[in-house]
Image (cartoon, rainbow, N blue to C red):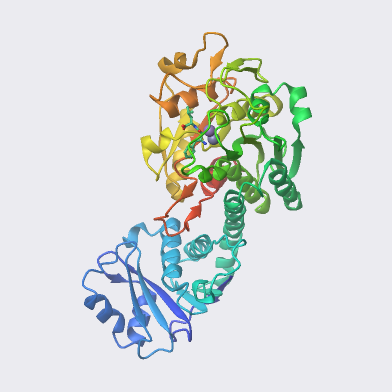
Length: 495
Ligand code: BES
Ligand code: MN
Ligand code: ZN
């Protein structure tokens, strides 16, 4: 799809295709909606009045087909909420909704009219369309033409084309990074296994990133018995991918660590068959980290950043790890593996320890589809945030608010730490029963951060939407975390 910015001409409506304009809460028209109302001899006002319940709330739309007075196929009026809270995220939602209204209607061009809105909002509108238009259709061979999106060009009409293009450059990079992340998450597990995943990340070197791939022999030398134990039942070799972006001179790096279980059967503690196919996206945390590194490089962020991906496949076979096994992690701490399905924390234990040991970062943020319990705690609209550091947690929460990737802070209480003590090793990989399952998982990770400022995002609730209720997220892979982390780095750790 082509996205272009064009100069607003408030004296003449666009010709052909579909046109989208905003209305605000209370039914107030935007400047562009006023223009279209005049050009159509009041059809916009009449349509809103006749629709009875349209009052400009975000999410509402009114659509006119072939309105008189202008030469357009469709005119879409999109409710965009209160005018004074129109920010980047609201502009993204508006544009995503406009796109959704016409995407398979047969029109090829969508003109989004934003005179007077400013370059920043126009750029966010473009990102909103891009995010909404994501499709993973490479394995479909028989889809009928009329089911496929018809829109090929989105023209965003603005006062200052050059300013909008400049504002869009970093957001274009962000959209591409979210696509990269969504593609990884969407790929089936027979295609995307650890080595193939590592190869795709290696290709990001063309953006200026440095990518190292550690295989099983190298990890064994480092003593990563915890990560390697998870992958030992798989025919596919485990991989540790280390990505570096050096845009920050000699400053201390920031570090991001991701769980990349390319498929999680549960191992010998095998999962039920029903829904097991979802576990292809058990690598969503690492995909967010890869997407973040992608955007930091593409927009040449002024920061030193490290991304570490722990890539394994959790399979049961004759060589698989058993419940009851004891493994020694790179940190030297020993772990009794009570449940082979609590594998993500075993992967992250070594990935976190390696990251702090090698890079001595300012902080570490890990992302992981770690526990089903976080879905029970927070539902599907929030990821859990766990942290030992209020400043880091607040920075994440602020970026979460600004980007619309919701987080909710959860406790990391010392009184529960003993729940993961083991009778025969330094710790066990599950708590006592299911109580506080996401918290005991976070407490486990905390034992591998060596006291560094650290935050853990449990994104098991948000990595995949089935179905999605968010206009900028199509059903399926979300790419959750890319926008949020990019925003936090941009606002707090650059320059
Ligand atoms: N990958 C799962 C967590 C998960 C569950 C993600 C549902 C997305 C949707 C993780 O590896 C897992 O199996 N966790 C166990 C932990 C338990 C054995 C302590 C869980 O949540 O049941
Ligand atoms: Mn598991
Ligand atoms: Zn898992």
